Amino acid sequence: MTHQTHYTSLEEFTDVLSQQGWGAIPELLRILVNQAMVEERAKFLQAEAYERSANRTGHANGYKPKTVKARVGAITFAVPQVREGGFYPSALEKGLRSERALVMTLAEMYVQGVSTRKVKEITEQLCGFEVSAEAVSRATAQLDAVLQAWRERPLGEITYLYLDARYEKVREAGQVRDMAVFVATGISPAGERQVLGVSTSLSEHETHWTTFLKSLKERGVYGVRLVISDDHHGLGAARRAVLGSVPWQRCQFHLQQNAGAYVPRQSMRAEVAADIRAVFNTPDRKTAEKLLQTVIQKYALTAPHLSAWLEDNLPDGFTVFDFPLEHRRHIRTTNSLERLNKEIRRRTRVVGIFPNEKSCLRLISALLMEISEEWQSSKRFCAAKPIEC
Image (cartoon, rainbow, N blue to C red):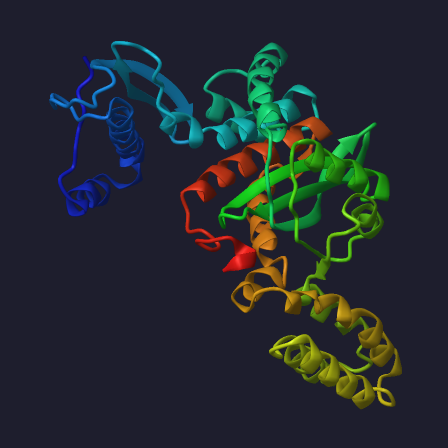
């Protein structure tokens, strides 16, 4: 039997780290995960160790060692067992999927001969063995099956739908090309945030956006009351074709940024930005439209191109006024999706150039799956139905 080590206080836990330095990280990680798995088993059994309970669904049956090769080194965990079977802790899986995807991406780079000696050293350090094409193939096949099932899982009612695209460098036919990564997130009627889907393409052409949006509907998305996005090339036509009856909120933050291209002098930028924010911060659509006309007239002579652009584009950011006041802060921009993309960018920067489209989709899917699971236990957007709050 593998014994469990417990810390009675945070001070005791941090004392070990301060005394042993970073070398203690593997041991501390082992202890934390082990304790999390024990707690998960207790919830599964609906009873603590040795507890007599009428609600007990099974019996604990010791622990089984399992060695995992992580970035901090090989760690042997004590996986709790259940006598009746049917239990396996998710604590091991949740934190390791994105790590596996990163390792396999680096390994593919090495196997395909597009990496450097440094990448070879990294993969051997992370994987713990010399990388071969066969090893990469076996590992990626297992991981890809899990990620594909997640990408194709059934969906349901979504009140607010957020859409965005970003780019990653990918090798294609011997050339380095920009690969578009489409991401959709949403908020359910119960106020739960969800990562709905992810897809990759060599362009943001209307056809690819249309295919992506249709796939969301085919997986069960319905009840969308508002689409929030920037004015991406191809997205507008695709959105009208697939979600034609759904109102569109153009990201106010990007509108303010885009206006900068029409400001004739650097000295005017701060003033223009302040005027646009004032329009968006008004309490209702009628007031916003009235103030917008004032701003348009203000720049009609000194910045005619800006004035015309404001008149044509700023009303796209007014749809939010038709929705509950308490929701506007969340649905006026795509900032929540931008933060998600920032986290993806932080992790994909390690790779630099992906060896192919599959490896790009694999790593980003693993990251989004991990984030989506974290969202399930986080604070909700709203406790009741968003439209009725």
